[in-house]
Length: 118
Image 1: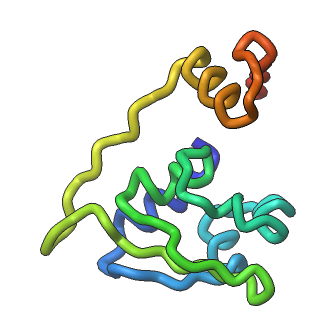
Image 2 (image 1 turned 120 degrees about the vertical axis):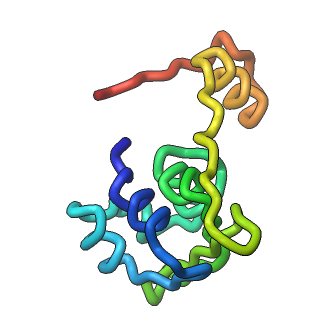
């Protein structure tokens, strides 16, 4: 996973909330965030995308974003009193992804193509 270092950081911290600058996140990751992270609020949404899986799989949720100030606030949502291991998110099949995208954009699933680059 591309954002695994962020997952590890959040999974191993004792904090229950964290306001992080984009620079801090880049330091943890070891590479720059994409331009879309600096331009679009949707990049930080909790919608099970590759980047959001980094915080969601550690039990966190992005709750506030300041694009101008380049910072985001995460809140730990998975445990009760102490840290609990969060099960990994359910994997999605290509067909499920196509069906979801088709429903979102109001098109037939046969019109959706998914390209995976590794």
